Length: 270
Image (tube, rainbow, N blue to C red; front, side, top):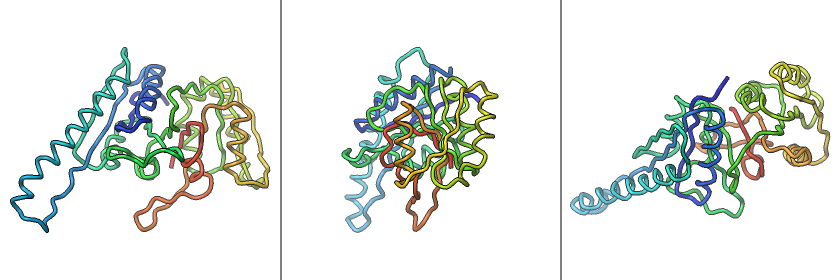
């Protein structure tokens, strides 16, 4: 597998320039097209008010949305430095719907997550949870203030299942170039099933790889992050496990914790 088109979510939040620069660096490294995507939904008119007032205000809603998209495009062009083959996709639509639609022609999506003390998601922003559930593509979730990713030391969080298998396959372009790969399982020994097989598979792709069973009395996510930081990893590869309920996006256990607080980029598949 190779990355031919990397899709990055562009918004006007303070974390966007670093995210775009990170995605641009990956596009140059893998000789891929970098596609920026942004969307803004025009509010529906308030039919409680006078219809003449609605007719006057609707164009201003659209004008404001288009101005925001123009600012997003300028930010994308400024942050994604040449030489680089670039594309731009914008729409007057919901940001999540637009990004998921554009994912049909992408090999990797790059989205940002919020830090604990960061402002809420803005009008153009896309939270990673819904994209993970809907896009059917590998998602690189980038923490705030991270603008470079080499993938020199990679932790594969292994739990035998479709999600983890897909994540490993999606990460092969990184894994082939990594200095060291750690296949790590947390919790009960049953989760270790297949780890040696996966390590052997990655070794056949040229990776220098070891396997690790992490036993701990603390949470699996805490142990995984502790292990990754101890190994000086700069990328975590893992399956994303979740479900929908009452139109909310709920992830359990390790997935939820990593989306909330991982200091390292996470390449995830659902």
